[in-house]
Image (cartoon, rainbow, N blue to C red):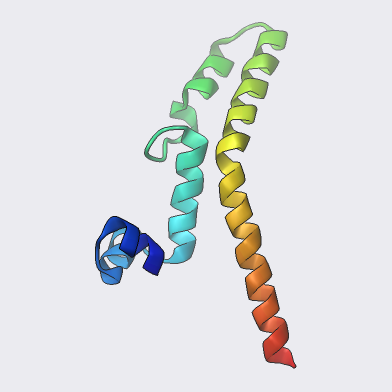
Length: 99
């Protein structure tokens, strides 16, 4: 959170007041990555969901879905790397504390 505050050039308290906990910030980042915009977008308002619902052809529905998932996964991948790294660091700290 300190890094976020430094990058935004705001006080740490401002980050917590704006987005809440690390968990809430991460959720916001994931939802933003899924939306493909600069803010979270509810699922039913996402363009690929609307296109999928409107498409009558099953093969084209599958193509819409596959294309959307490929784009979403590319945007989510860096966040999942961060999550994996944080989990590993937490696990290492917990193991060290148990010794």
